[in-house]
Length: 454
Image (cartoon, rainbow, N blue to C red; front, side, top):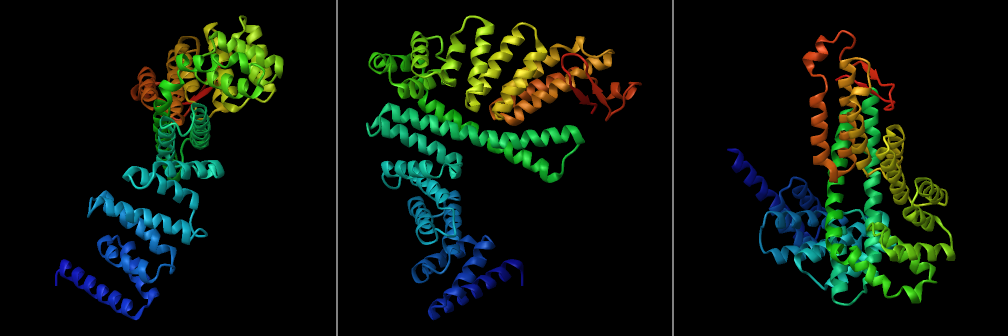
């Protein structure tokens, strides 16, 4: 008897057993046979059994609907049967988990998935889908981490705006809250990567599981970068400076004494889009500072200040007054750029590192440091070998930029490869008398760092 015949015989026996259990009304046996088929990825056979289980044993176990979800996902992915029927089946499986087994599943995540699938396959009313996602995002933001759910949520918000069901300010508020949440999860994952990269540099290697963690978190960051591009692309034309300024300009005279409007809407929006050279921004900063001095007004006054000392004074005050992490990162980055422009590379490096520390998913500071380090090759190190070794350090910073910030992945990889091309090659390391592979070179110039020879 060949393998195919054996398999078909087994399927027949299992089908008969399921049929007998069905006749006897034995839900436990039916569920057991169904689950075994699903676990074995014998989805076609499990699909035949799913309907009877849902009809005769609807409350027997959450596993019916959890496996049912997997089965319908498989059918949709492989284009088996009617797409509409399979999509509705998937929605039914998700809905049952939410309504029947809310103590067994993460209902927030299931609602996000359900609304996203309904939108994808055109099932139900889009306003209801929006409200479902809005409810989860408002009440349980910690579980709102699914990239597809985030994209769907904002697309639906835009549709609600275009159909006049929400106003432009509500769309902006949704954008602010969602991008803040995206930044949070990016920072969480970037922190994990950075800690592991620092450990690798210090100890020379990581465990297989730690290397896998870096790969998985980099994939997550790539997905969130896609979400960011999608959300910003959706809002883009509505939130550019040439649209924002007229929007707020028309209300300024009547609302210039409204602290919430000035700080929560005008300044935040104009600052996030770098519209800080607009006269409206200057007027808004000064008006809010009169009403209530805060980190927001201090940051704004720093932006419009004309001297470095004045800028730094206001920006430092903004940090002392409790600026959020995104603003702290912006401040340190702005200061770093000023120091870099004056050739004060040590101070610039310090501020770049502080910028990333405030916002771990912001990789550009590392790329900036890499460029500064590489440009200082001739002034760091006492021998030709050490001077060229500086490029390994530059490459390391470039690698770190790409690891924590998916938007820089390609640029950082190219930059790191370029710097490694300038560093000593294997044959040169072999011939070097002062150092061996694995040794550490310390640089006493402004870089104040060390690198391990590969």
